[in-house]
Image 1 (cartoon, rainbow, N blue to C red):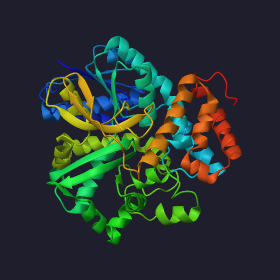
Image 2 (image 1 turned 120 degrees about the vertical axis):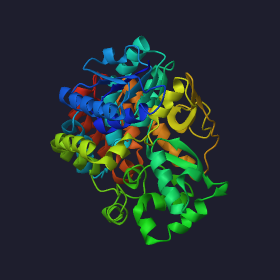
Image 3 (image 1 turned 60 degrees about the vertical axis):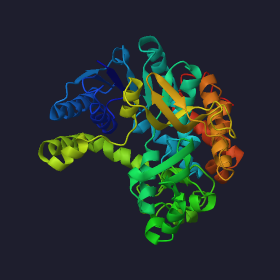
Length: 448
């Protein structure tokens, strides 16, 4: 019987969806699914929702819970992390402090000043999880959903190279489905090849039955309806010729082009009709509301599972997340190809090799095999390679406790540098260190 441990199981949206996926596989239908969280109330809620899925599906799986991480990891075959280091009252300052200096951030969980400080707070906990895995379940497949994806995976893979670690993001699946719709083809007929770094990966090929679909997508963008869905990403595609994976709001803060002036924010980041056009503090607003509503939302979910057959059927069907298919393959089930975050060891050849890249990976029994990409096209290699170098610099600062490396990585951040001088960036970073000093035990000094 397999054991799958969820660390941060109180992130119940992820947890219940992934549990529902896991038990659809024969190798996992009788698994022990161990839920761990530090919040007892949210852990109870996660247990109740996952047990509901098991009961409705009449699966022989068992759901266990614990507040003890080591107990959850002991003997696990698969580990999934969905943690958040610090409540919204802590990480809101990642967005609020830069705004005081004129850096307008939409989400701030990936890179730039907000993403870097989220990484600095989270890295010690992630390395501690790796230490426990190396002692308690060294042969497990470890799948991380926690952001900032690339920087956290980079640090973990560097310190624990013998563990099977990959980071997962659903932007590849979501974007490819959107593109298929625009091209007017069935999603199951699409073949694609996607590579880069997390949230800045690009579809190098996007075809159906051997036919390039990019001309159809380019034609679709001539309609206002399609163009308006993703202002930022569509502009990037029209300029760079390859479509990027993560939503417009996210991508607007990864480059120089869309957020450095209010008129540009107004033009590109407010009127789009997609999920996240790019307004200031988009995700902060969501989390503030969720803090007060999550218990009601959970009860509504339970009521719909009991009384709405269509909703229940949708929940019980296998979703588009990769984790369950990967764990199934790792345990000897059907091989599975996914886009994962792994060390760049000759995979992408024209960006820094000291980085974490998001590329196709083949999972089979006890093996992760990356698929070589080669050179990225010249139109996208600069932004991918430059960003990967900045992430590596920030990770170096986190692992060494060197605050100047952190400052230097943020000094080069495209959005920050397009708005602030070096002196202003230094002052901003010092303010962010001062706000976070109690959460950064790896730093002996904050002077630089």
